[in-house]
Length: 105
Image (cartoon, rainbow, N blue to C red; front, side, top):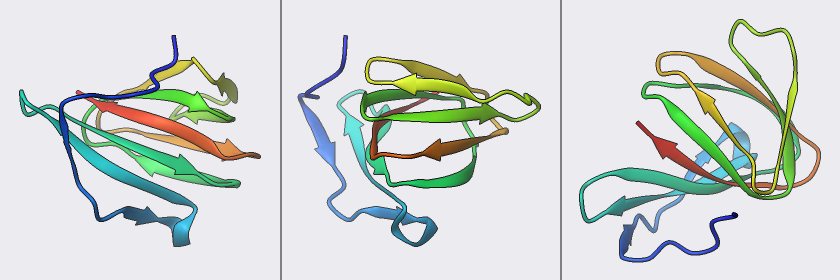
């Protein structure tokens, strides 16, 4: 099931802008203090480093992704999720706008 709304959160109104505007996100904080980001990656091939483990949930569009140490590109489309270990990295290749929720921890 695709997450379409997130209720009862605080939203950081100033956007996080990465890679010259190819990735834009907003932080959200839940009542329990947990955090996520909601954003979009525009067509590009980018490499992200992680601190905490992440789960990338695709809510619209699609991407190909490659985890550090894995030579294969995998597909993620609306409704799909993929996990990235903490203190690692992943590459993402986007041909159409990829809308996502990044779950931390």
